[in-house]
Image (cartoon, rainbow, N blue to C red; front, top):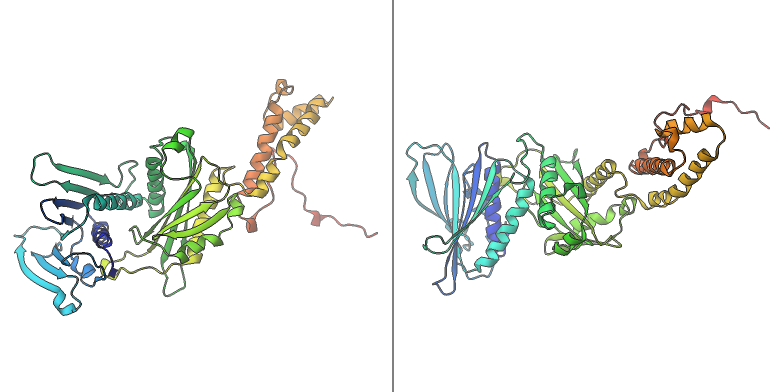
Length: 456
């Protein structure tokens, strides 16, 4: 893997540590400790990335290729041990060294004295702003915890010298807002994690009824290169209150696409973004203005989106079988898989929340519902046949004394809109006959093939 910046290197090392914890069958802890040395010139920050995962981290980082130009000695200090190892192995990895045979220096190991544990620590000392590093690391942890991996707790610590009380600590727990059972599927975890993320970053909006969520999962079968590849998509749509919209840091007309690859935050390409252009957004009442790659992050810009309306999307692509760290590699973006997963998520949201993401065609038909309901209500109320009126009211689920008000009209309008929304929520190619307005229909559908017509 090619590394071009110190921040990219640190995030890669944290990601590797997280994966070792994820693949462990035990509860694990990931700790990132930053210790600045302000007395040095320029200032130096020591970074320790340790975990209690499956161990054997050397295979994951020994082939890293450094292309950066920062002022750094290029040395990684590594301590690692597996559960069955009798020693803790120590190394120095000279990442700037181009000769692979000279990159690794083996140091004396430490005995474990019969103790059974596994884990790794990677330490490096770099010249970097601690505030910039802290911001990057916090953002990384907040994103990775959207996946809600249940057996991993993450800790971010800043130590300011040896002064008592100078230790600053942030502990991130994967289930801090909404704990889930260990048996929960990955897509349900992603769904819950994105909801937590949205609520936390929309001025701590805890009124979940304002949020509508849908999820979808697509997989690749029959292809050798991508066989067993799974793409999960979650879409959250909500309306912010006026107060919340003023506090929110993200504009409603723009959507950041959070992308995860093999259970880790990942960057995307413009080809990835182009997959969003192939989705029929108009069938969901949306108009996509552009889908662009902003420094490895996907951003969707919408046209004519209501000012208090916000859309959040998360995608996770991974292999069905657990991937062992030494064989991690970049997954080739699959446009059809992206489009299918996002479309399934939109369909799921539309099906579970009537009236949300209505197509333009459905909205046009709904605009006629008030006049139609008023006309039908007028016909019922103006009838001189009490039996007819009673039958109509019975079908509406109303009492006879309600015939004179607007109750009948509103009830009919709701039923018409309900049928429109129900029919609009079905995939276009598989729409069945439109449902009846009333549940207790006594009329049956007519099969015109049962009739014979006389020729003129």
